[in-house]
Image (tube, rainbow, N blue to C red; front, side):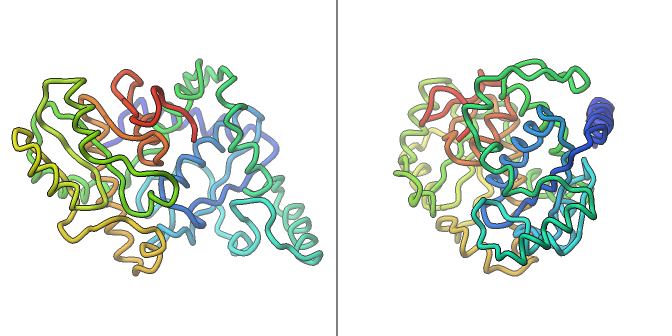
Length: 316
């Protein structure tokens, strides 16, 4: 159910976004995990607002897509293009091996369709941590007047709107949990996260939670059921809730991309269900350097989120 405040915010964003002459077509879902792609989309939207560039989406062949990309799970929030040109020429990172003919095709296509930027042409600006963290953002049309966290929180509120099918499936998955009124949310990433940095043991998360609250109820988002088995054994006074399946033993993005579209769709909605539960927790404990943790950190108030890798939420 979308409330009137969200509808009003979205309408104001649409009008402001369409008032800009220059256009970026942002490609989401090319090669990384969903929350990496989504977090960067939010930063791209903010960069475009700050620089008066119209934000347009391309998602039809995203790696998380089932049939229609973004709209498989969410309600639309901006114009979207579906031209197959973007599959070949709209990349995430700069430095794609384009030939002289490729570059000429890109130049001609952009001129014909009135597009000024593709994703890779603004990638360094979108990922410039210093650019965002030194600014105060002021867009009164969107109730934005504050730092990058505040701006991202507003943009997340506006874009994170499930479609009817996703919402009903999430409700079906979460209702059997019978969660208590108050609980602590934990995101404990295992799997291929170890290729980026040293993993933090599950005990550290529980000890941090115990230092913050007397609550003994925890909902845990994890990609490895061994985490649940360990915590249930070592912390018998805690009530542990999760949507992790017993056969899950660590997320590997390369394996995810080998799944059928139906399997990927089911996995995505299960992930969204866990994120919904985390977002309603009394306190969140995770790592802001993980993309789900960065997302939760910009969706929830800063005084309810605690990172084991950083004292404060930040762009990674």
